[in-house]
Length: 52
Image (cartoon, rainbow, N blue to C red):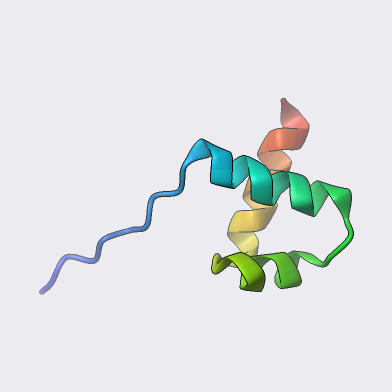
């Protein structure tokens, strides 16, 4: 079995994508596709920013 490496995103990238989701100019799916991440991940980053 081969080990699958997970992609690690930096705080700046997470913040940029999360803030873009909060602005609401695009849908979560559009933002996710544009940045190459899963829509659920965008939602998690958005929620984390809103909670802080």
